[in-house]
Length: 346
Image 1 (cartoon, rainbow, N blue to C red):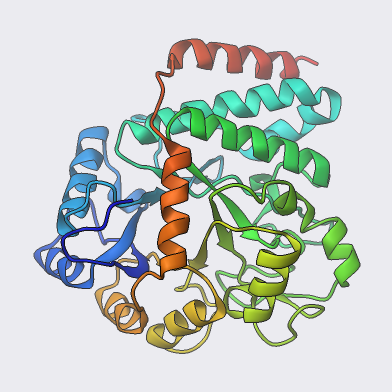
Image 2 (image 1 turned 30 degrees about the vertical axis):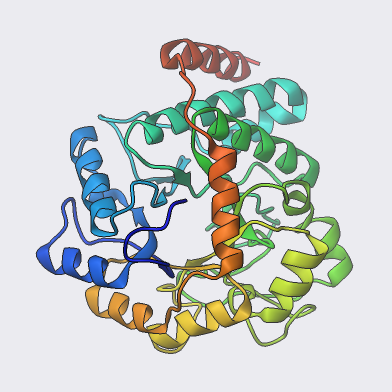
């Protein structure tokens, strides 16, 4: 990542309100100088329009290397949708195959990751907030559900690594989420603060295991979840204890740590207070998604510049991304369809 002429960017990633920037948004982003941007369905109409918006956003911070994020998991969480983009299967669709033939499932997930990354890199999007490494339980809230690669930690880790490999092959940085694990939660953190009461040993053996296996990857997104065995008061996103001892320590993750959306109802306080709390706890970046101008102004007021450690982690991630290699999308899709059709007939 190259620093823009504005200097060290603020440690925040912002969304915008629509398919093109308003004059107010352009002025605000030029002044705020965020580290990156994130796109949603409201921002994506067709490929030419998305490429134009990506260019507009990068122009506001005078940096062609500015990270451009999206959530393109497949299934329920896809910001790019037909008819202009492929309808990718949910991660859970690969779980049944993995139970019978893990190597075939890994191949399918890797191919799917290549196809997703090829679409994203063609639009100028460089970071995808996937794969989900959460492990749902029998009584978990459905917010994760088929967004996960099943409930076996070893299979989740193997398929998560395959997804990451496919992304890298397509020139896109994957983001493992929601560290250290949202799957066990019985509430949706978009609406309220989930509390997980499982003991440390159980969490370590199950929920944390896939994240530990993929701890060398360059980006991770936090979970707005309280783990009473680790910190009885604060969700992981704003817990210095969870971030330092569990995420950075026990799990061993050394890459860019970005918060989940601070607009979610799991967090309390003003947006300036939320931003300060996230950064004080040890996250490298604050994520704000809605594009609401007043909220973004408050978040910008609470955000300091990207730290030296955060900048180094971003640069390491960029070095791992390298550049998109040529993906023969029709051939890759044909092979993926062959695998999935064979699974459907099994």
